[in-house]
Length: 539
Image (cartoon, rainbow, N blue to C red):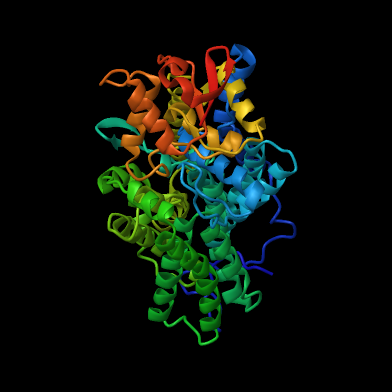
């Protein structure tokens, strides 16, 4: 039976002297109460906000939706492309270039969704089915983390709400705004693999802590860590850093036993093997190597710090208390490990630095509540009411702002393929049905949609996977279909470009201004018109 407070691991003498007496939890206390159900329902509602906004556009305004569930569609389109390709090959390749690429990417969620797509389910739906799994798994992971580290009903509740909904305004590229990556709800808008990986990472820490206590299921933490690494390798990297740092703290505290070595090796080994696979993938597959380079960007550490100050200040108080369990040490080392990976991401060894701080509200929320407990928050008048007001102050305004920003980003806008014309949809459907193999040249507007919808390679999609020289490819497509600053192409130049590309199809969207049949002439084998859109088969 799990004890509800931290014990001195391996001390053999009972609870730490600065902790309250051990109390066994009442029978049935692990079940969800009305408050838990309400928080889960609210978190689920936030996770469905963008999807609801998209469906509103479809139902009320008759928009043609491409199935994305996020505010930055290039990532969702990449997931759909992987799923479409996995439905044919199990492993996925890069469809955002015209050249053949190896089918060498394994992601368990992509494989399952690919299997559903092979059975006839639309890729967007087979991806969307992971949302409830991600939301529920993440909620229970955060709840378990807080319950093992905090005593008292309201402290646990406060930590749960803060971990799921905390947000604070900061300076984002010169604007007074919120930072989406620090807000778990933002991750549920199209990044379900990341949410599931984060849930698996937290459950791995909890399982490692429990195995340390009861010496059972030593394999479970490593299995969950491996799942986190496969789904989103940044979470695997973070987990390795947390486990190493936390166990080092245990060693310094004299709480690391010889029997714990086997568990540590199992957790690190299970988590690290998929990371080794990603390291090999990044060296052996040109597409992955180029994507890593393309995803490099700088981000201000002070922007993150300012956003987290309301949690960092009370959390700092918790660092005055010596951790007596692995999970308590993990909560304290998590922010340190996140910062180390953030720094590493800015070097040649990493990329996308903001990923390192995803989920940071989980340990900081717990530590902040613990800090308030240490300073004697319960001694003030009406501590529950005062705590509720404070929690509301740092959750409600930021959540409202996040929803407002998401609504604007997900709304129909020019050159955003979240919503397309019905004629463009018909052209894509034709390419999906046509049995003739071949890749597609189109502008990046529809190029992002082509792989996930048709399973075909595209000339240009986005500047992560359509590499190298993504901007040059974007310019070439714009030049061919009209609208390039240098003017319209000549017939000879256009024909030479098409014939040398190796593409079989041209997809003209509804903004095309070039007269493609006149420009290419005999190069075109057949024309299929769909209102303002058209598909041209070329030699």
